Length: 279
Image (spheres, helix red, strand yellow):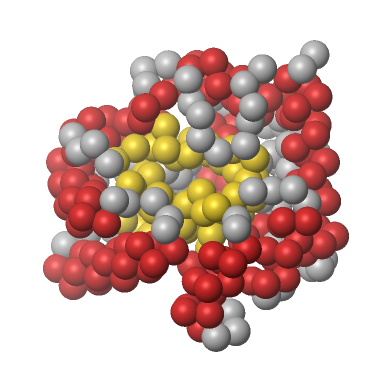
């Protein structure tokens, strides 16, 4: 079996950046999905965080994230592009190469596919000089881009080589979509794969999807969809994906624990997936 590289989001842990990095490294993870808030809120500010990350030897899978992007105009669009510019400059200092972007979730944003594609193209163009890639992720509760079919259509319309997709198991599971729903997406277009589970066996209402995503995600092996998550990992690997598999778990209960304790859930999930795939 191909060697899999598992990573974890720093936003899945509580504590200072230094405490999180220590726990992550001790647990044997070589990569992190970095939350931008971890940088500004750390001792020494952003510059101190950059130094701390480089000294740790931990690689950065991606930076989270520009939210509510695409379809805006005027001052809101200008603000989003300025925010992106600051993130891209920061990523250049960090040596990070992937910026995660999610679509607008407001019903008041015009659902104009060509406009959203144009905005994504402009963002990808802005990132090109720094060697940064854009990973676009649909949200099941977004009025405009809530499936991977819709997200892939936008990526194709934008037609720029540094724009791809972030595959989030939660976004698939929340709509009971199997990995085969991704058949039309080539491995080269998959920028990152995020893994998390949840307890409900039925399709949650949209309001519940948001609440679960932000407060009640579980690690693979703890929820009701472990087999489907293993299928997704195997599917992506067989497809030719060679990037990181990131535990992207937001759970209020885990965030009440010290990072050295809560990360043990990720360690258990890593071993659980590997054991299942080796059967």
